[in-house]
Length: 109
Length: 124
Image 1: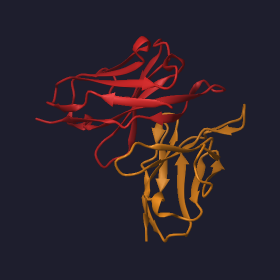
Image 2 (image 1 turned 60 degrees about the vertical axis):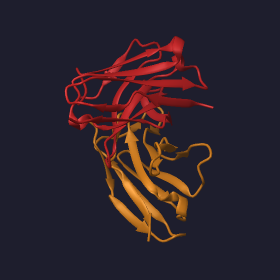
Image 3 (image 1 turned 135 degrees about the vertical axis):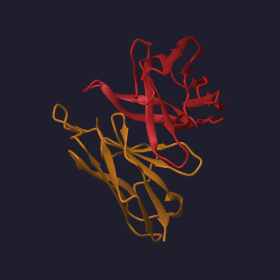
Image 4 (image 1 turned 180 degrees about the horizontal axis):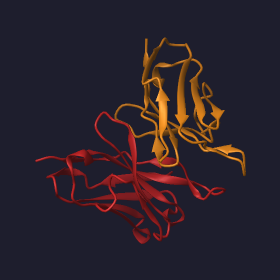
């Protein structure tokens, strides 16, 4: 079974500063046939369902602010919030196939 | 606009049964695989089951296999989850989600829309 591991479990960042979340897959998510990494990021705010942020490792969903970016390939991926805003306080999850990471809680320092 | 609205959650005793429903609108549901994803209180996300658009294929997570059954009625634009032999560890918010399939590899890619969820509590 695929295992997704995120780090850290939580982080506190000052407003306007950069937040970085890592996700590691137990097996490669890169498909050589089309050179796509099937790695997805979601944002979940308290009391709300998850919201699709980034798919194919680096493609932002429509309407997602460009301060959110995804990078990585193969088994190691990163979600970066370039300038943290108050509304970005949430738990962030990575996902590959049917497996989710455990989540990373982002708070304001 | 895509809308997914879950219903049917509630309090049930261990060993009991419950049937969840998800009403879909804003898209042709028969064209899409659909999933149930759950989240225990204060915990992360766990994929539960999914079903092909025409209902011909169904898959389950190991923790629910043999106890839960996913189904759909495309004439009613509805998705269902029949949950039997419920356990305390099944306590969670259950979300209905629309699957986006990676055509090139023939499997689940990501979930592009989610309902608000319905809470199932298994307790005596």
